[in-house]
Image (cartoon, rainbow, N blue to C red; front, side, top):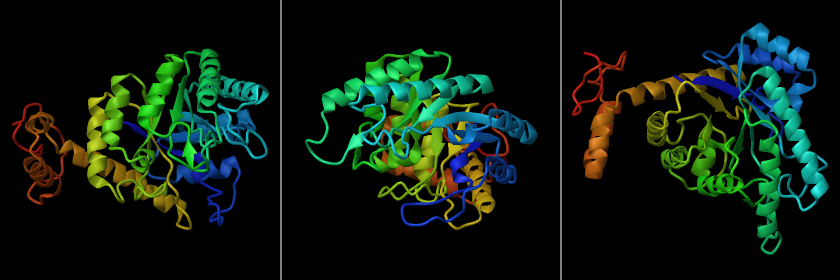
Amino acid sequence: MNKLAVITAFLAGVKNRYMQYKPDAPLAEKLDIASRIEGLDGLELCYPADFENLAELKALLNRYGFGVSAINVRSRRTGKWLRGAFSSADARERAEVVGEFHRAMDAAAELGVARITTCPLNDGHDYVFEMNYFDAYRFAEETFAAICAHNDRVKVCIEYKWNDPRTRCLLASAGETLAFCQAVGAPNLGVTLDIGHSLLAGERPAQAAALLARAGRLFYVHLNDNDRNWDWDMIPGAFHLLEFIEFLFYLREAGYTNDWYAYDVFSKEADTVEHFNLVTRLTRQMENLTDRLDREALLELMRGRNPAKNLAYLYECLFSHSTPPVLSIPPHHSPKECRHVE
């Protein structure tokens, strides 16, 4: 079973471009909030914000017994790297970015964290003929290659996104990001699959997971939800329950187990602890729903490619009141029936 983490930036200082819903808070207060979230195993830390005092950070993690799923390195900074970080046309800026990521990787190694993740939100463009795409890809490839070479034991994960703040990000889809990672060629460069970003990009998230896993580049997973019109960072399962079930099924097929799910969920004015209590509970409930599905039966149905039969099976397994919730998975079961305990 995958462990559950929340990105620390979502625990306080919650704001959008129009208003601030919750005040900023020091690191100790954020971890105190996290400690009251039921079922939470750890945190995705933000660099550099959470690393102003490394000794304090270590002490807080030990006090609450939190693991660290990843270190989220912010590649957009107020007052600098305004035309992108990794793809900046300014070689001095790119060198500064490389140095900053090396320091983040050193911090990860000191904490025993196996990966860093970053979302290149400001690497992209707003208008036609604004950016030289050939140069942008070349600069980004060189920058990530230099970052990855610093420590090949730390995975570097790229979280793709279609847009915001640029109207079109440079790495906007699973396919684009996979092609980019393959072009760089570093074995420790892969992808953070944020299901909300996948939905926003018009993808079927389970298909994106399969694509990345086949290439060995599915490194990390973020959970949230949206209406496919904007990256709203909503409660997982609020809009796309069946897509979530398929996503969880394919993550298991891909071997993404005994790892981490991290939440970037926006609680706005709602109580943070209450909000994330539901987030963790619904995640486990969706996992339990996925447990109802018989793998061999599903694979056989998919070979037949009959949507009527497939959906009938799904609804019978997932939503029939006659089928009790799964408590355990029998070692031998009929491939024609939903998994359940009598």
